[in-house]
Length: 550
Image (cartoon, rainbow, N blue to C red; front, side, top):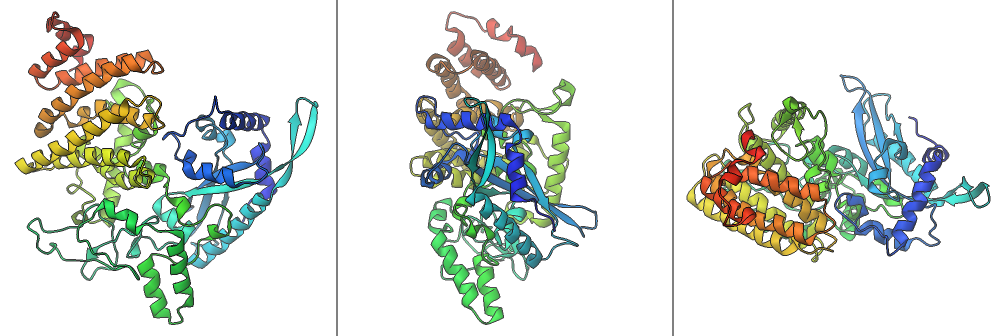
């Protein structure tokens, strides 16, 4: 086992003088009311917890660092006998566009080996890492160049870890959670898993498999009961999550129950019910306590790596194209531009997930094959992002509406994307989509709202979704209704938001016109009236340069 020395880690953080300058500049931005950065969804680590932690530090100075750690394991060989863990430190003091750069993000690793680590060996390595982090909290002297004195001066630097993230297997390992073999595998809440009768592994479905006529599930499933807490509801209900959230006091009570039980079989039963193995190593740190600080999961791993690469970028505000930009390499017209290599990776991920997650639990709309449409892949990713949005927004009554908005849209799309769309599905979907539109229109005009970025990105998503769903007949009619309302939003954005880039708005309007022309000619006339007035002819629309790309 090898772990980087704490002093070496600090040296890496401060070796580049540009880093120190950026830190001081970021510190002034955070403390200058006139130029303070608002919390945005471009970086979840700037959320309320980070601000609360800063207020709890005594003698806070511009040289104190706040870091988020993201970890993951890497098998060194194909046989999996050697595994190395890499931990990526993100300095939260830096602005979001700076902190993600390689020069400002130190990485260190350890090998729990000599072979594939057991749980005990991994915990020993994590304990050694926690000792490093505790030493960083106490602080070390560093030398920083002072331009006023024209010499290097000694300052004390402290490093506080306030957030840990990773994909689900990595986070389970770092927090000593049980993973999918626990009856309650979620790190953040007590969403009960279900399984085939007689099977060994529990899964967390987005909806419990139930008989539409109100009978028993088919096939039958077992629904576990939490130790000391029962699940009274049969169907999955997001509004009950708040009552089943993992709180610190409940976490400590479950740990105490495991440690106090003398009978090994009973101790194992309690641990499986709670979804815990033992105390998380982070408990010894000052601010990174389990499980409250893990409420914001690392979306890069959960969505981008395991389900739909780059999908989260729609909601994170990073809409610039990635990868090759040659037209021949592009698939669809999504704002982040999927490449064919991205789609191949998505298909491989879905195949692998299909091996371990039975389709009957709702994880796949239907068995994956080459005939999957892009819209089905997209809705699949949107559906699995619902828990992330719940933890980002639903806990705070002031932001709960953003989760309700997102969930209404996803639920409406899910109903319309089924292989067999019934009339009642269309009616329910229309209610959901109209609910989304109402909430969206109410909040997108809040110019100085801290959540304006969310509404902007939802707008980008709406503008580009028809590129993937245009082949679905039931969607076309309803999307025309939705697009009609969005025309008004585009025009109002251009009039009311002076800080939005003009070329971006014009590009969106052109793209909006193209999308409308892909549907009905009658609706194209509505768009013509909205954009050009009643005295202009439809020839103005048909002559638009983007018309030829249909």
